[in-house]
Length: 195
Image (cartoon, rainbow, N blue to C red; front, top):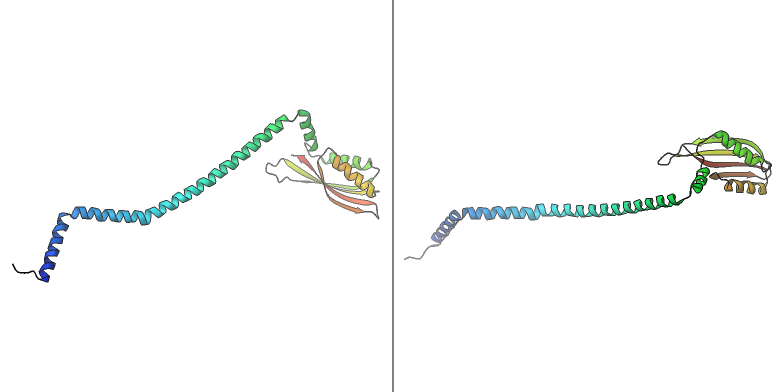
């Protein structure tokens, strides 16, 4: 036997590889297919999957927190309802009296006239404006009352403001413009009513 040349070795190796490729073609094809699928999963699907699961985890945490906040809010509302139910009917009537059930400008005129004249003061003018409510359920309205009073000194003003503060109707004094030299005061008061 003569020694194989380099060309013959290459031919034999190529023939041997062709034989193996022919015999094990299906196994090699399956392995290549599995390698493509596996690399696709690792480089394409796995990052997307991780991203989606992270988003789901973050969203779940948010929803869990929102649920806890809503449960706490619901518990507060239950406590408020229980506290309200413990208030006596007489106290509820007093609270209702603080906020007028309806808005009648005539009532405001007569109340203010009575309040001012009881102190020996002169009511020069009164102006009442009703404002629409801007609260969520729309049931509370505001009446802005502008008063011009004369014959008043500093002590009289303090007494008048104390009377307004202690009156049963809920009122906020928004502006006070006192002129001691002329013994006059201009007041702007807000009262509230139910629509």
